[in-house]
Image (cartoon, rainbow, N blue to C red; front, side):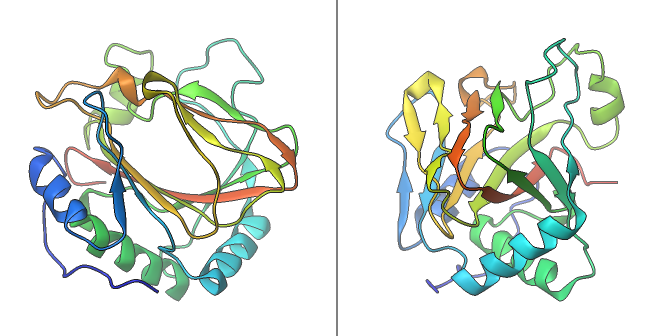
Length: 221
């Protein structure tokens, strides 16, 4: 397991510069060379045994995934979702590692989620932030505000398919056991960044598992 960064507290992640500096200073971190969005990769973030245990948790408690603003496309998001138990020692350990990696204050974080994609399942091109003025914007953002950062970890490697494509920068990230992907959902001025649009592409063979952690502008709950 690579060395985890020293614990710091960078609040919600906005402004982003301290988070970018903290993540970028760590060994093994790669930054996408694009001015359109801030995107980091870190291979081997979680060890295989932790990934396997998380996959088991997701299998037990998975349910159909949903979207905040229905768009009339019943096949827009066809994966399954699992709310990981915050009291589970495994969840606590993963949360600790994500906090130390990002420097973000866990008080601003949503509960850790897992997602499962079977053959043919996908999440079509979308952004993680809630669109200002959207039907359910007030419902989801009135308390904690919008999403600032996304941290996602691939828990396995499906035999074919399941990549994550960031359309605006023409970058396709292949699932790789334990690999973390982190990105900032906001622009420098705090407005949402449409260039973060990404597609969880269809799994062609096998099953894909990921965990996702989102952070907000204000403390969660």
